[in-house]
Amino acid sequence: LKFILTGTQPLAPATVLEFAVKSKSGDQAHIVYHVPPSVAPTLASIDPTSLKIGQSTTVTLKGTGFLPEGIMLLFDPSADLTAGTIQFTSSKEIKFDLAVAATAAEGQRSLRVISPSGASAQTLKFTVSK
View 1 (cartoon, rainbow, N blue to C red):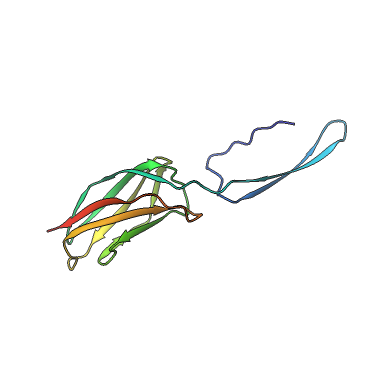
View 2 (cartoon, rainbow, N blue to C red):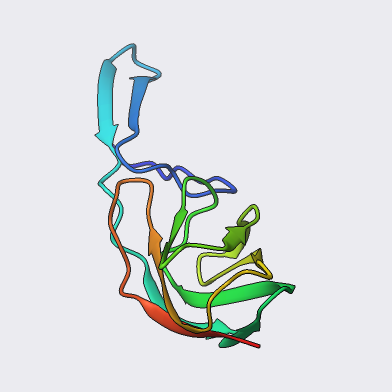
């Protein structure tokens, strides 16, 4: 028995799909499919690479393995940074608004993307400046 399941969004990691199949002759089969855990997303680029203190801008991340839901952003250091809702563009691009408080310190920051299963991408660096 072979069939293809199609949809408009990727299946969430660790989802269990159960199917009951019945042939014309009356034979029945019960099939269980476990969606494998997600692979860690990868990060290729961040744009812009420099953010101004006291301003807000839309940040674009490019890479692979982005999912439409459940992705988290981890900033280090995170003080005085406020990220908006992540906008899923494709499995290769996400966007979000990032506000840098007027009280933020200048310097380099790192950003990591974490998948719903906890798998983590490598870090990308960006600069906060006056």
